[in-house]
Length: 500
Image (cartoon, rainbow, N blue to C red; front, side):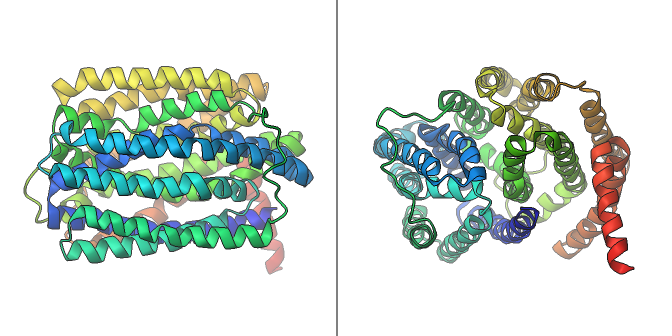
């Protein structure tokens, strides 16, 4: 099982790095060839797709958690039953999603403050929605199943193929300044290729799955709770650019999207590794409860520590990178001094609750957490609407930072006190130690900002700083986390023994 986790992580990391590099080329091309207005529009529409995807809210998480029990016992009938129920859910929402896409495509040209033609906006929405429709109807269920079964390296490889082809189409057509609606049609056609690979793989390896094994009245456990949680998280995480597009302009949404692109890239790499090994937490909790606590704390150090290292380097280099990246784009100012800190805090606080949040789901506390997620979303939206008028882009970003604290405190308290039946002191020390590293980074950047003139200097600084922070974060987590310290010592002993 550990070998599979390592394989998943390595494949995921390689795939995500390639995808991230390609993904960062696209906004630059759009800004240069189409302008900040179009870049802001496409990113805001992407967030609307995220909202429309709420029709499938809760299905994936509920399915994955329900599968763990049957996968650990290799119970084919139980697996088939859950898969049958889940597919029924996905198929039902597909028609509703298609109708929703058509409605949004008709209304959006009248809502956004944009200079892009209305018919272009409508076609862009329609074909982007058609791409998502393929995912809902066919591939979403297979992805959830393979990830829960420890086969995320398969989903990552197929995703890599799809993304490479997708970005190739966008890059070639953007260089030719083809209308963005035509580009979206090309993206839709490319999306059919990964579908073919999924069909082949599932039919070859899992033809035994019986999609008729569930009773018509069967439902997914805790699905309603996960619906609330996913709706709340989507509202929470995908509202800023939409609010900016409506209250300010799509150009300002482009500024937000440019900074957000970098942090999404970091999060994509971190999440790729996390979701590759996440299944270990679910299976260990059900099979080897006595080992789970050590695994929980070790994962916390790995994910929070790696986040601190990456975000610290990012904080030091993001303004120099933005200056290089937006060179030649003059239709709006992209240098905002306090945006990096806000984005870093959003990602750091989010990562600090991932392991605890996962535990609350597999331990059966999804309903309680869903209410807190809803409260968090309400606080974020309310503060964003209130603050955007006076503080603009800073208002929507720091509203998110404030709201994040609510669920961060709750899920870590619930994980420690109610589920693991222990004091929360260890988690507080673990998080505090890592936060101190980031706080010192903020101070150092304020005292002596780094200047970078080109991408080569940026790359060299990045490699050097990443090496330094990897050591610092590793030492800090060895000091503050007993479980991580034990894991590190065991690895060192194995390395020493192999060399003897």
